[in-house]
Image (tube, rainbow, N blue to C red; front, top):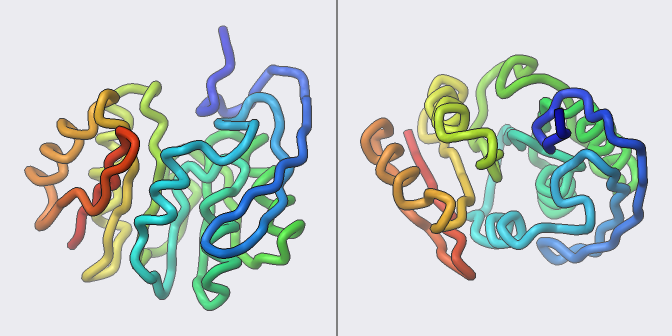
Length: 195
């Protein structure tokens, strides 16, 4: 079976790389590896998602954190946030821990499937979901976010239009009190579902 970035324990040989990127006004450094999503740098969807986020406060969950781009960038830009990062991929979770240290950012990283290893509730949940895992899985992640949010909390998602953004928005509008597209760029839609 081939590894996917949502494989729990990648079998691919390690091939670590150092990358540098600018995000939310900071220059950041990361270690990436084979068997994780977007190992060559910040993917366009995640970049658009980060730039579309409103100012955040309180407790934030980086769901499907991979090597840590979102959590590290947010923690560097907003050090007062209480950030939790989670990924099913053990290699991704370990890289996220290393990249937090590398950039002097404080956050908690837990390894687990979806919300399985995550405790408590959040003011924001942010995700670039694993589209290739299928609609049933990603819609489950969206639906399971509701009880994980504090009153007034929001789920932020980025999806390419051609990979199902319109149907994802429709699903959110049918299952959440409010859901809307807050940004659109280069074929990506940033969606916000709010309690």
